[in-house]
Length: 95
Image (cartoon, rainbow, N blue to C red; front, side, top):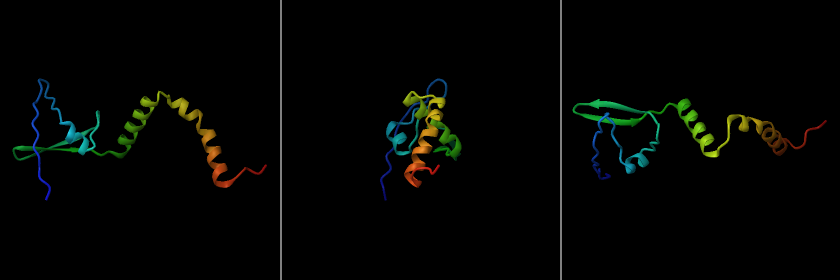
C-alpha cells in the first residue's frame, strides 16, 4: 500500500484554494480545467471533471494559442494534408 502524504494550503479571501503543484501534476490538472467538489462528511473530495468534448475544445484552444496559428490557418492547410495523405495511402490519383 502506498503511503499518503498530506499537503497544506490556505483559502484566499475570495474562496480560492491553491492545489499544490505535486498534486496537480499527479492528477493531470491544468489551468482552467473544471473539477468536481464533493462534500463527504466533514471533508471534501476534489476530482477532475472529465467532459470529453469540452476537454478536446480546451486542448485545441491551447494548441492554437501556443502555435500562434488561427483556425483559418489550420483549415487552409487541410486540403494539402488530405491530398498528401491520400497519395501516401493510395498512390497518385488516376486522371
